[in-house]
Length: 159
Image (cartoon, rainbow, N blue to C red; front, top):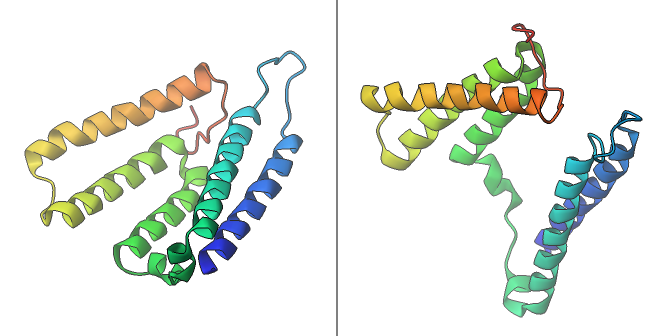
């Protein structure tokens, strides 16, 4: 039952965010749906999945009897990853998308590799992996800002 309440809260937050997307400014010349189109699609898909999960829980007596452990996400490696995401959200505006994404990606991939394999990334792997990550982030920034006209924080680099 606790999971149904949690899913309901997520659905309410989604509906509120969907409503907020109507406040996004659009150009009179833009006929693509504007900057709110993609967030609206994501929110609608999220709410659909939430409803499907609720139906699955309600239809199964076994699922209804399961105890929901919300606080599990606030323990161990989940907590560390959650704090990484929070840190990323805090630094993205002042440092910009590229720098904060590189910092987040390097720390997260290093942490997840250590968690999965029990060892840190070797020098050879790092020499290949980190430049690919950095180039991918720069490419994402370039494509989204120049072709999709998405405003991403430039930060201290101020692209």
